Length: 432
Ligand code: 4AD
Ligand code: MG
Image (tube, rainbow, N blue to C red; front, side, top):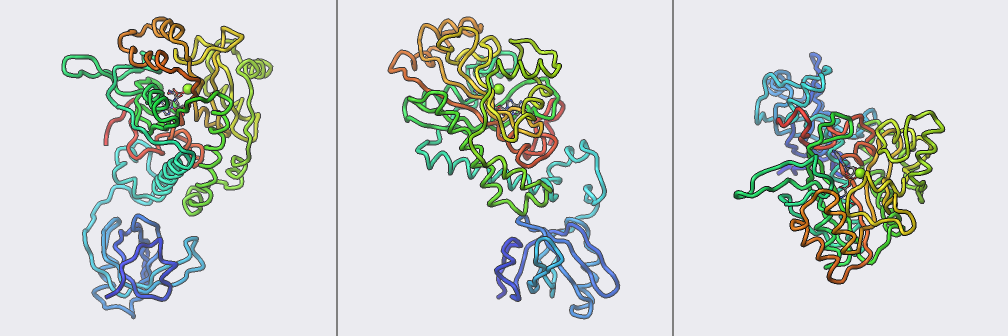
């Protein structure tokens, strides 16, 4: 019996006979030899079929098979110094499993709408393959990073009665005759978790009914939100930069093949593993922008062009600290000596990718928080459980949220956040 292997393990089977379950991505043939480009979900490589070495029937089968036909491939692994992958299979036998006539995604260029309409098939192509593998690595490394530092993963609900990040971007639904919303953030629940388990992180889908059609916005995106008890903002910033550098390092260490497929410059990525990242205040950021003829006044939130300009002034991601209170959510800790800013930070990624982390120290005083809940137009009854956290053993605590797809867009060096999630939900798209 020949051993069944995956393409990714070909290096361990040089000169051995193996069996691989694969799909055909492309093919080329002359009268005497056929080259089948194969993928099996773990990697892509070439199969070589020499007419004189196989039966006429097999050679004809190979020539007739369509793109994305599935098959069992039998043959011997060889080194292939001409390909980036480094190995190929010399095919001795083929068994067709599923034919595939008229596969819509041909090797020619397709428009983005066509590709998104066929996302269920587009996922098989090289570029989505590389991005999804890197996505998996970032998730894996995230769990590893936080588990190693004593955090436990605590799941937050998706159906909620609260709106931590503002009421305008809520998805409403009905909950047995009552109002409910899809979660915008697991943070408030993570805060309850931190007071129960010291250090926690949530990781799950979050929803924002944002009517923005930009390269950075998804309607449904995944957020990883750590929350730490007995911790001030400075210590949280240290964890944030260590975490981001760790993600980049692990992608460099484990996704070399995928970064090459995406033609991502690894030397640039290496810069992002050096710590610390710089910190500037919101005040300084406004001054920098004004000096460079941006039409911004103190008190406004930054848009994409402003964030891009600011990040361009630094070699690495940069923290912008202490934004105006009036543009930030109700739960942030007020500044000890200024009443116009809060203790928070956004981490801006270089190369025009914008904010990848938002975080803050949290308000701890019951009366202050109650007042902020009311000012935000929220119902104190709905937040009474959250206010309890300030009634029973309130402690300084801090946390942050990393937008997974934002971080991936940056690490992968792709243009649009929609490519970094398997099935993107966009303003005009909920199919497939
Ligand atoms: O800055 P945000 O809104 O912060 C929070 O939700 C806090 N509760 C986090 C916390 O302190 N626990 O969102 C956090 C991150 C942003 O920095 C961005 O990376 C990402 O989530 N994000 C989005 N990603 C894709 N599409 C959108 N529409 C996003 N909105 C935010
Ligand atoms: Mg934010």
